Length: 254
Image (tube, rainbow, N blue to C red; front, side):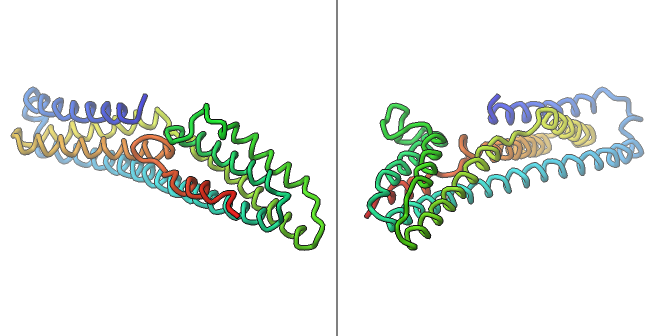
């Protein structure tokens, strides 16, 4: 199920709970709506509200941190890719094939993460990103430096390629963050019973109804944002490919 429809379901559940609260207000005996009952409900719902706010805040905070870390990884990958290409350029003309392979690996990486871009599966520049990247590393090991400067450049290139490989797998694992379905169900349930309690003792007028519905929309919107942040390479909130495409344009230059 898409993040949008999860947010829609959350809004329907919370808004529906509001109307249930208004209906209960009409049907419950008066003693159930006394000040003593109201105080007891407020204490209980205060605990639920604290739990819901804590869980939602932690989920959004975790998703934001993960999103920012992945964005930093993308930018670091772009920078290290350009540095690797420049290191190979300094090594000498014998690295031309490796630089071409690096460019193909970068293009394939962009295509695998952002398939909606200009590179398509049928494009001859695009292949298997992992295989091409491993091919770059194998080619670097196969270099035969003749001078101390070339040996240093080979070591530097291998270090950069290892950093790129590590970052690639970190991005792969970190981009698969998902919120457990049970946790979402419990969170929506907590928010729904909160709105039942709000509507149970609130005046029945248009201003109160609109206010509660706007609050329900805001909460479902926060759930949508949290879910979108957990899908950083697709959806309404996504990490831009601009840095990687800028790096690709710089590869292979003299």
